[in-house]
Image (cartoon, rainbow, N blue to C red; front, side):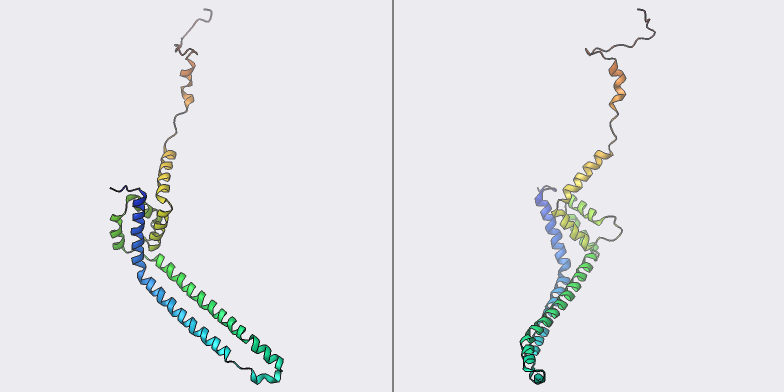
Length: 208
């Protein structure tokens, strides 16, 4: 039988959480792949059109500016359109990146379906469930996909061991301090160096 706190059990719990996250993310991953593919196609078509337009651009009608000016324009024309394509590439890249980051944030903020959580809970060890509770925090909001993602990350970074250390340290700090040893000093003063106990005497005559 597998130990609930063994590395094998923790890896098994991590795999179960990963599989659950993959099932939840599958529709969004499909949409992201489609959007990125469409963006790449649009970028490629526009870049090809820009380069073709620049390549077919003629400066023959500018002879009035002088042959030297026409030669310079002809020489630097391809560079100019490659710069335009570079700017277009940056625009597409940052637009897709901003959309992707926003979509990922929305996915993390999505509430984890109750049925999924109920199905996952019996398959996890108590220690892993404690990590899920820890990632949930104050529980002011419903348990989200982002909480489950963080729980999986924390499992890989020994959160179970850290929670056990916190519990142990809390017990140490919450235990009342031991009574001061000086309270037993009057009894200790009655012991001679030899270790024999000296009975206290009342109304002893000092002249004896």
